[in-house]
Image (cartoon, rainbow, N blue to C red):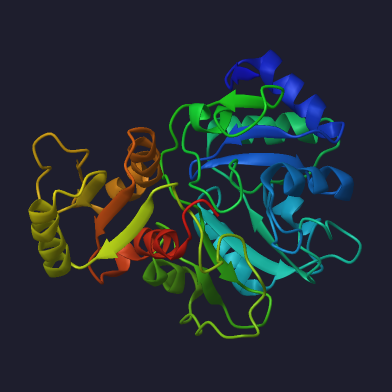
Length: 329
């Protein structure tokens, strides 16, 4: 069921469904989320079932403000508060110690929990309407089958799930890749997943350098080695390797190869797409391009590897995980 996200009646219906333990898909500025009330473990279990997602792979709880975030935390460490004040509402998730007995399923059974305050007006309106019905946080991973390409439009969500799912249409997502995730649960902040908010921006707001990722870090959403994968095989190639591969392709007449490159122009009659030179613009369209190439029949997607610059960390992370995935898994 696709409804306009700006419609008060649609928002009220979505909030009622959340309060009753049902699932609702809604837009955020990053990607569309598949939400359930975070304080209801049975409702959260429906997310894992619908996505085919392992129940120990934690979700992010979306909240309206810092006061609601505090309800899910045993404490909000000072560095977490600094990051909230700097980037909320916005595409940043903080991992903090979880309040005992609260949102255990959403946390994947861990003693920490990821919290985010989205900026999208439809997401905020939904959280406000849900709060009025006693729902103070909505657990929501991306609204797609587990491991696949995240959705950045309502149409993407509709294509993934049964017609009975209520989907609030909020247009295309502005950011286009998931939030940066910073672990604040162990005393020293550590970046677990890059996004469009860069490491340098996070360090300035935190007032200290970010620590190195280690084996003791909590599990976090979207950090498995293979993730974000289209049906086509993704190959992430440096420009020289990409040029050589294309030259061999021309000799062999290999079909079904689409190229997504900043440097090379699209080949005549091909499925190729030009990648923007700007990292923010590339992030905005990335998942939509992967889905479009899948829909156009590409069997392989060869992508020019982004430069080793901090602004490209989020895009590079998603492409690396997409390339590590097994097609059809």
